[in-house]
Image (tube, rainbow, N blue to C red; front, side):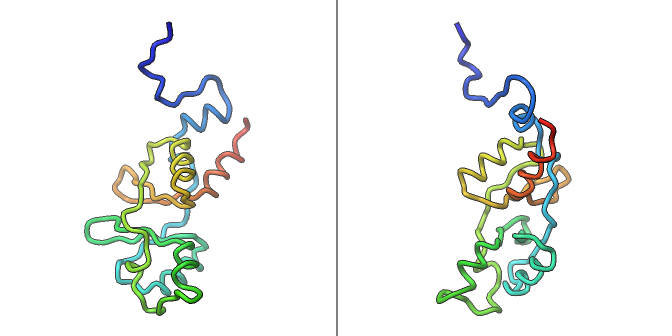
Amino acid sequence: MTPLAKLDLPYSEGTGLECSVMEDNLRELEYEPLLLAGLDTPALEVVNKMRSLRTGCALVIDGNGLAGIFTEHDVLTKMTGAAAVPEHTPVKNLMSHKPEVLNEADSVAAALNKMSIGRYRHIPVAKSDGSYGVISIKNVLKYIARENW
């Protein structure tokens, strides 16, 4: 009879992509350029910095750590068209508050799962030294493409 104790845990038998995605942690991925912004930073200033760094998001920090994430999706849905806000609007009014955060020890599979279920393109990653990084779906796809499966 098969023991049922570990049936809810993800596992992979064998080698290759399937195994690596389950076992490799987020330290294996290339991270996005990190852009940090304060709560009261004007959104347009953050957008200009995102453009110059060629990154799709900024982490918004307050005195207690990560307060939110401001992404290119926020730019498109909140700063353009009929619903556009004034350019001096603080980023805290447009960001996604309290985003889900992964740890750098989490697996690549965990990141893919969060991105798929939450429909996220960018996820903050808490590093062991207390700092943050950001991974995007682009970083995950580069990881998958670089390996010899």
